[in-house]
Length: 462
Image (cartoon, helix red, strand yellow):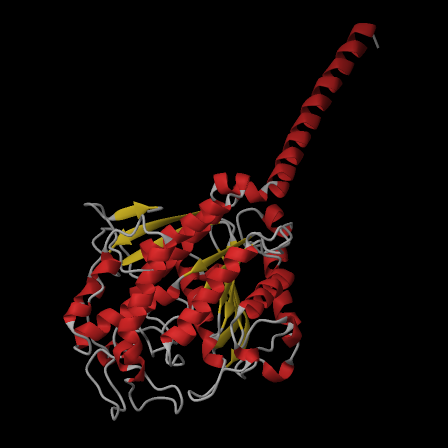
């Protein structure tokens, strides 16, 4: 072969090889960057849609077959006009995220995880029930978001602790908090080896969950009204730490969202129960976030207590149980600049007003935990009443009517995670920023502060 032709062929091979190698290295580098820089890629965005928006779609309880308040609407009635205002409750929150989120809790936690799956647009084809606790009651479920994230639920009937691992005698629906390693593995397998999502390569190499949501199974921490709650059923700093540590050990989360205790039938005294646990959570988080060797990087509090106490107050006023001069106008003002102390004073004042109503209960439906009239009913009732028409925000005094309250709950949840996954915080880990951001999310969405639509029908990351 002539030297010139040999030289030309060699040059061609070198150029071709260089191009191919360049393309291979570029693809490899892209994969490596996406794999090891996933923290920087995590996002959550949300949009509030007013009921007056042209593209408004009401919340349908797509994945919750038990607590859909529209299914028994003839046994319910609207109460306070406040609830129908699009600036208070009559809106929905749509969420986009690639975060992997797991809820740990009882039937309320399962309900909240099912509702979030609808809010993040998990399609039926990408959702799977991995375990039924009994009959049609979901115990473990998993759903993939269109953006490559996921939302899962893990049912438990007691405090989430390592000592209850594989306690087969106290699995749901039995009280005690038993759980199975096998069920944890089902969720982890769905996350690691499932083919659900836009990018299978990234999903198959993501070992851990991003966010754990701890919903305390207060209804299963049984005790009679006249008894003192035993230590093993107390939600104190030790129990909070153990629940966070267990969530970290089993799911590998870097962020935990703690839900405060809502008004419910199992509560007898707001101050000694709800406010005690709430204070314990906030005090614990304040100290925990300054521990340099803490297991979980970020812990935030979602103040469901405040929202349910506001619902309780307005419903009771409308039923005539409370006089109108006890309205929550101070809760409905612009709370954007309140301090945490002012916020705490507000909820303490709210507790002073509604706590006496905790003793006004119907003769239904549990011997120890009867229905609270001012919270559950949509009409006046007394202690001899066996049944009342319910309202449209509380399904049964325990679970929620998510088509009514889901907009605020989902907005608060997304807002809190935006605080954590905001790039500036991720870069500098500024604890003051996170604390202030958490306060703003709770005062915006866990109170009755009106949504400022200002002539608009949709608000992004409001």
